[in-house]
Length: 470
Image (cartoon, rainbow, N blue to C red; front, side, top):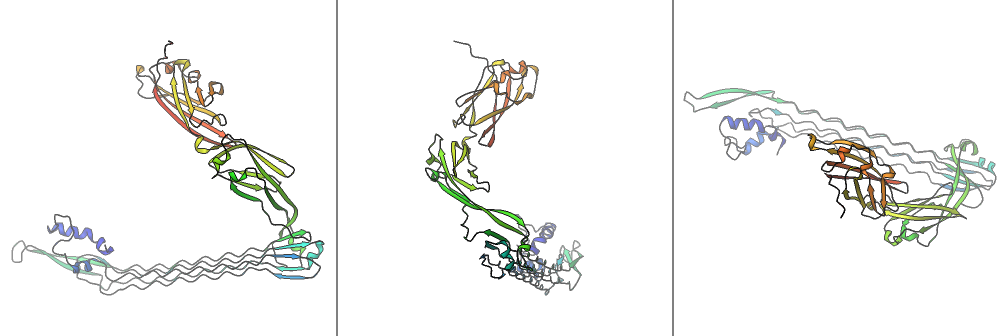
């Protein structure tokens, strides 16, 4: 539906109701105005100006090339500067509205067409970074023969926003329309005049200027006291757990020390970041996994493990979030061995359920079973909220009798079944009698290998009389 017609819908409904022309179907097309001509008159005349197109963003400047230099005493002159980013394009000016064909014969207020908004300017491209240089040397003083310019490129300017265009002005601000009721010549025939108005169209907004691009970073210097090029780093490996079986994986990386004063090492006038790296040593370490979990490693074929060699020559082992692993690591003779004692899918960690609520008084206990049968590996701690209701005393709600951790001595585990001795907690004896309705909320905290999760277990019912021995 055209917006002008929609905005005049209440007026038309009022007119139809007043003149008893509203059809039973609920349609707003009363007979006096059900024509194509009415639709045109009911809509705001002309057309609004179109918004101008946004300017395109400028392309980023390319970064300077990285270079490896082996010094032999000869002077070296390098330009590793990044290129400037391109300017963003200006946004287009908004289109002018169509201001023609204002009618002063319609029986409703009208709005003149609005001006078109300007397009936004494009963002300036970022400047390219200066290139990095790695220098292999035997005499540190020879670095003074290197002149390097590794400045970052300038960011491009943001494009200017396009101008909005002026909205249409009303050719006529107000007019009168006569409406009559009854039959001409009869006493009930009455006419009245009503004034309607035209409102000027709004001016289109100017587009926003695009932001300027970022200036590129200075290049960096790395120095290596050697005539031989460094081998590539291979510090990280990510693969399926099943691929680790009976294999060794070699990880390596070059260890660097961070220094300041790069400018003082090079020829005067060089432009480069003052922080630089100095090669310290090559780190190499092998990794092997030892699988002692009861489930075969092939059951975890889709689970990925990440190995990462650190600067302290330790291999960090990271397992996925949905797999809980408990194990130990040992490093000896450039070989790190990680022994997996337990590997449990996270979904099996919180599969506790109430098995039985039994006895009464100080013998009252709640039995919880681990449906995943993993409690020999997982550490479990319990917290309980015990609420009781006794209809004999007219209690309409539940009263909290105990809320807190359950001491370890009141929790016994038989393989995968836990017994919580609730009757031994500091709970009033009246709340432990048979027939008392209780609400019990148990929060179990399960932990393994540095990971933990909570599970909430709820039970509601009445304390039953203890079974008589047979």
